[in-house]
Length: 70
Image (cartoon, rainbow, N blue to C red; front, side, top):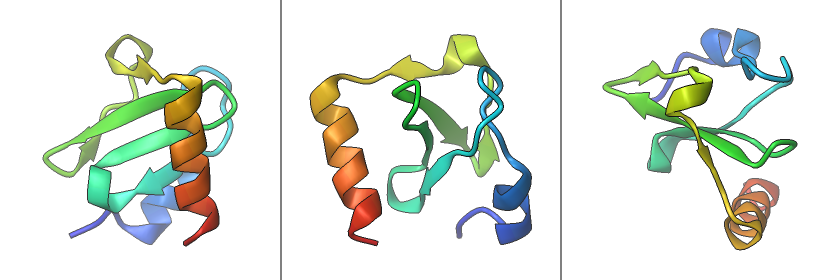
């Protein structure tokens, strides 16, 4: 079960306030501008900067390709 579409419309990155990409199968929200991944824990987005992870350029490209192929 994924996140509610209405919730996804209002979620934003806590750092740059921009939109996030949602990857239901990986249970993450992704900020492509900052290359930062936010986890989803038990269906609840964890939008704390200190809980997020910076991704490598290769991981960014993988996620970007995945998003563009949706």
